[in-house]
Image (cartoon, rainbow, N blue to C red; front, side):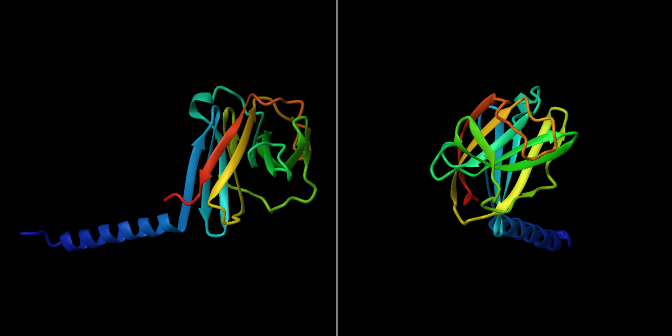
Length: 180
């Protein structure tokens, strides 16, 4: 004979599977790693949250600054929107930038999209996670460039120069934000 609780357990399991499936349908995400950092992209509704963090095997390196841009190279035409972030006194500083050449990275006075720093961001010692949310433009396939430096600005001024702090690593990633 079946225990009396079996129908309740089956109903609970079916409900849990349905909730998980619905949650999976409502948000789409993708993750890719370069040599030194990993980037996660997660769509939720009309927004996408990107999270940048150093790879676990690179935690011995201090975070100077970390950057991500939307395109194939940082000097593409039209200019590639980039987000540069660093830590100053355990505070995350984030700045929107663009570049006209590899030595000329400048602050964007009128950013192309609103940017919100996520509560998931933290920097503690060599452990760092920078997460930000922007409006999702509906593109399912996104090309990303990234860069990382173990030296960075020693200021909370989001317009601080980063050119003096050459990147230790850089690369390209492709995202599929439609992945289930």
